[in-house]
Length: 312
Image (tube, one colour):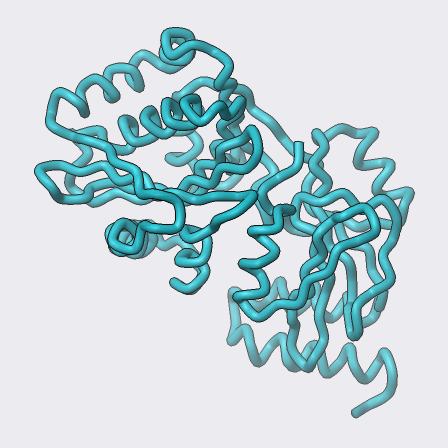
């Protein structure tokens, strides 16, 4: 199952962010991710690397996320090939909902409280609307207001606004749309959904504080499920859960309440081109959150530069 992260539309998004891209002989998308001091790494998001690619100029390592289940055999094969386990970029755990099932079957798979929340939201006046692909500027403004407030409320990390604007505007072989749940004309919950081939992805969601009794997120996700079915998608990927990170506990419980099948990928792996600089990168990454990130990374890259090829 090819991910939207390997689509032509996603490649164009990366170019719009100023990143260089290239395709391997078998079509896998590689993105050149910049690092301090003119260095970089090659990244194949949810891509298959069938053989080790020659690095782009100044690339320290190759990072990829094989779209295969997490098994001891898969991990052993990767380690034998010289890959090192790395922190996840994309979520390695998710929930997949089988859209081949009828609406009655899907509702039956949910927790009782979730079915109740969906019915209650409709009775309390919540309505859900969808933007047209690539034409949701007004809807994006509503989404962004909710998204910023949600991240601030929960202390969550977010990319710059430009990134989400580009995701919401995806067109071509991966198309985005924005779902908005409103109460009396006011947006109280929203999400960005991406459709690629036979899979829909529930990517980013947000809700307004103080409206919990209206259960808008539950109705919103149910209508996303119904819409994905109407577009002949076979799977809805809820894009990310975690059984280990406490800050994800609420999101994980919410997504699991919709039924579906838990899926765990083998995760993110690096193939190192420049060992000393890679070691400096990993050390700097560990310290980045606890210190002045830019300065710490700069200093460690200077160390890596000296040890790799003499002081410069």
